[in-house]
Length: 132
Ligand code: CO
Image 1 (cartoon, rainbow, N blue to C red):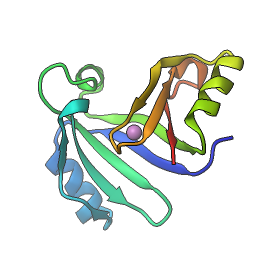
Image 2 (cartoon, helix red, strand yellow; image 1 turned 135 degrees about the horizontal axis):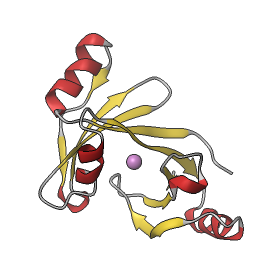
Image 3 (cartoon, rainbow, N blue to C red; image 1 turned 120 degrees about the horizontal axis):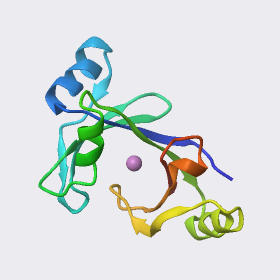
Image 4 (cartoon, rainbow, N blue to C red; image 1 turned 60 degrees about the vertical axis):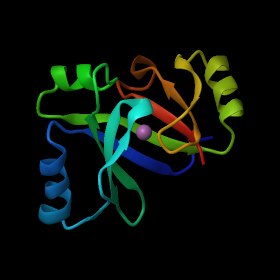
């Protein structure tokens, strides 16, 4: 069912320093920082030939990634995002398979329908499904 790896999201304690690592050390193409207030994050996209890395930094109080950074002060991989053709079909399949969704289908940071899945059901990794 899942298709391409859309992105890997990495939470960073310092967005400028994280951007510099990808741009200067690794020589990747990076975007300007983008505030996404409705999701409580500032993001920088790292464009790779076959996928993206999304650097995430908390924005405002009550950011959903603030706790992650508290538990992982030097940052870390937050989630992986796989593309699906149809988010409703994917959600039904997850339910039928007994995999827990975190909340329901939402509009994600890229204005596309997404569904987050419980890490305990996916090898300890938070998974985001995105309708491509
Ligand atoms: Co994501």
